Length: 331
Image 1 (cartoon, rainbow, N blue to C red):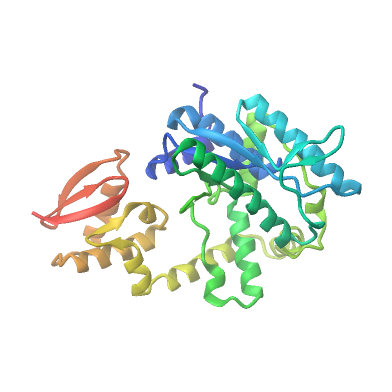
Image 2: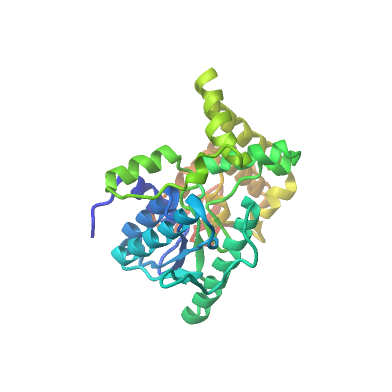
């Protein structure tokens, strides 16, 4: 097995905590920085988790000019990268020569980011269904959303007037969507690919300021950071705190609990303060008397064990922890 790098160790720990192993995963690969980093990470983690990897690349349709050439180049690049890593390659484009031949082709020229995103997911869902039927098990779709994407999306939603809904976070794992890079910055990914000596291909449309997201990414946030260094991190932290405030409601707390146990996969998604709130709420529901902040901190410390299944006793309760649940039963 290849020696793992620091970022790979971080992602491996996160995947192990969620008991993701022997799992078929379809990686959404565009050929850009983020998705190539995702492919590399999962490729090098594959032997540690016995992952069954596939790649899905979406060609957005034939058009003239620079963007059309990029789409063709990206398709070739991703195909060669998958051959190098020996990972099955799924695409809506079957071949470019002697002429483009599509398995799934846009009915009209896709112009907006929303139209292209919808088309991508239509194709990817088609591949997921094929893989699920052939493997007889649920297939996860791995996307390359980063912490930067999280901030940009929150800002776009707030500007559109989405209120509290606008600051809701994308999670590491949500049903069949896996986002291993959601806590990573783009700079981290650049450094990682440089370390791995892995190339990627830049989409020329990313340099345009016309799409609103690109303007936020390449102009507004850059200028904000220049005007007041540290502001981007502060803004990201403020939006996260708004999410925590929203999540303090009883309804949200109830969603973290199933019957007499805490849902372990959801618990892993929480930050430190959210974990404390969920544990305090759970202890009250379980009628644990005289619990304190120190008891809550002790439980969090015990839950940080690398063991997938373990038990401990606290507050006259037996605590049982496995991949699915955290459960306390009276002694």
